[in-house]
Length: 460
Image 1 (tube, helix red, strand yellow):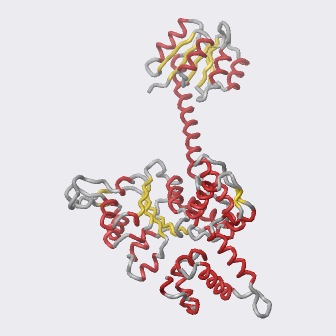
Image 2 (cartoon, one colour; image 1 turned 120 degrees about the vertical axis):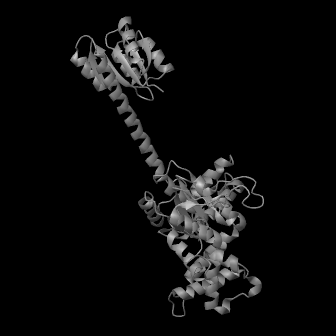
Image 3 (cartoon, helix red, strand yellow; image 1 turned 180 degrees about the vertical axis):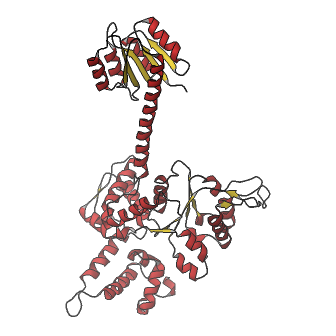
């Protein structure tokens, strides 16, 4: 579309002459005075205003003043027949881009208009870019002020502009997809698509087709061509969550993509070159899986060019009050209810809790409180027993003295905590591991270390 120019002059010959000279390159509008100009500016906000100074009624200074109050300030140029330098200086101080003495040189007018509009476009691009940068580095739902969290955020910022493949490591519920989105927004590919695939949620026999696509007739039921997630993410970022769950065949094709930057649809031998950033995530120990022969070693090294570990919530204890406040308010708004309030005792219990399910578990707890305790103050006794049981266990262990009156050493404390967690969980290993904030595998190793605590196979 052509830029719009508003010409304001009380002499018809001048305004019509300027219109005729400029209408090839600009969409031109004319006004005989400041009042008519004001109406036109409201109806069609101009990209540039070319106004005479001396007119009946309000003068050109009023036109410029009104124009510069528009949401998108136009380029303002003053014309005067009097050579009034003081007035011209005042117009420039108000925000006018240029001024001419009449009679004006039409070629000069075109040059100044062109230069002014280009400058205006550049300024708008700078503002847009700044806003985009602010969005890039906005944390969104990544809430907190702890050292552990901000260490991870700084790592993201330092690698986001590169093209390196990133492997996000962390327990379930630590916000790996949010971090992947942050990487995308902070990268040069922010204008491109962001595609997320949860590999464990797709059956193994369908995952290859989902990722790489297929041609019509590639297999029974393939009634039409399908574009895979890799192709859909071209020019952007592809996030593969739970990458440790993919089977051997998919591992080979993924390694092939990392080596060639191309994919082949099932049923086709034609490589399709792609330009995308790959971010993967897992809560599993891929190195251990490599040792066990369950994950390709060469693929592991290609995926972990930049490994980033996301801290579990128990390492971000200072962030728990902030997260609780945020999600209690959010779920109250979503459910149109009054926000629940935590008593100091309840808050202390929740801060001490290790949150084995991390932020996902905390969110679910807040939604439960927001709905069931709407507008009420939540006491410690109102909380789910899992919070208070572990809190009591932790406090009891910390207070246990040794025979000599000293605090028990770390190993004895850990053994006692495991014993009490198993008791609180009625011998259920999975529940005890959750109460302690450790994985079931870690709990199993501890039971091998202290077999006298093993509740037996019926409680596995």
